Length: 539
Image (cartoon, rainbow, N blue to C red; front, top):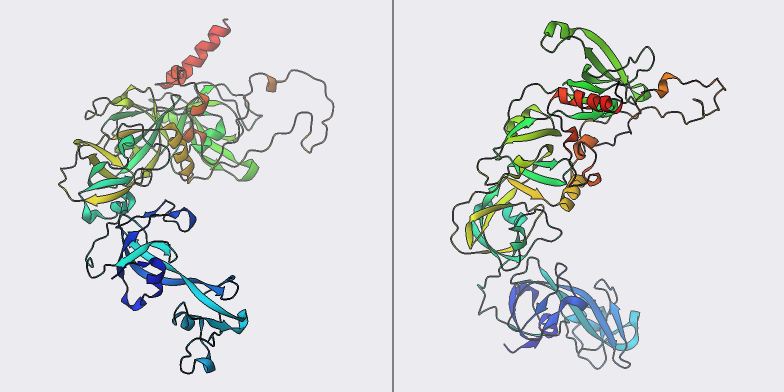
């Protein structure tokens, strides 16, 4: 057939013959002014194919024959049309009138009359929205029929033509039946970088990949306290870990770390003065077993058992006293970690709730340089279920990597070609600092409810009811001599899960030495503060 304008072809198209395949004969069209495809610029060039799948009336432009003025009508317009006196009149047309759809079926050059629009003759010019598929386009293209290009119908010639459809890696992840397969990147990942790895910048347009398979193994988010380094550990990590005692500042932080049904043993590392008969003082070296919260509201207390006797005397250890410590009591505590057993990552997670502090005492033997083995401490913060695609570059098939489509989605086109067996992938990936904090904001908060807010202390110079206190002789009381200040109220997520031993990573100089409080044993935690005091105040 001879080429027609796109408007002429669509207006004469019989919808019952769809789908139809068209070839662009002339004209290059850019998206910006009329339509949009997935937010990207689109152009139709000479020779491109369109597979028209549907046509929908969008609006009708009515042009006054005498003045040339135009009016737009919606497809739902209910007015009745009559052929103009000079036009042919269909049988029964003048008696019954024509609907908008019937008037359009009589041809665009046929003048019509409509009392609802005035006494003048009108020319109807429909504008259709054409739904079509294009090669290398993910979604259906919606094009106005007024597009200024010429087309020809080539359905009979290329009726079996295949239109390549791009896929997202997240879609490939759910298509296990197509793996392994080669793929070509059409559009790389958007947004800031996720991993500090050499393969990440190579995920760009034109790069050929081998997609070997998918994996749903769990991952662990970890950080190096005080060093502003963050990692994602695979469940296949084979390094050996040793638990490190956690440190707690104040009773409220200690209470936030107690898991239901599991007692937490700690040692007091800083003297803390008591509060009358019901809250005895705590001394350096006291061994406490935090059992859980008791009470509700402002009167909530942390129930503890203070042990007496040596560590090896179990009978004497049962003796001691029960303590109910207010949540706003200060103090300093270190977890009582017994033994020096080594654990694999999976075994450690079964024994210790996250977050927890560990040290890598034996690096992964499969890694040429295990970065975790050089760190004095590592905080395991959260366990994640993160499906990944195992991939490699076609030119370097022996170097494997794992792409999480949830974080690094790409648009790819599946290609024909051989795929080699899946290579080994590194079980440790270092995260960029920017992405680490974005990920923390997306993680669910701890399931355990936070301790209730402690009672608000009375303001200086005010009594308990907000009235000025009665005057009394001023004398140095015990509250001014060694009493511990109350810790700040913790947020929903314990600061111990998000911050390092000496505060949040952003508050610490990355080049500073944070080993001052990296206690390996309980004795270190107790003796170091005591030695400092003796050096400052020799007796």
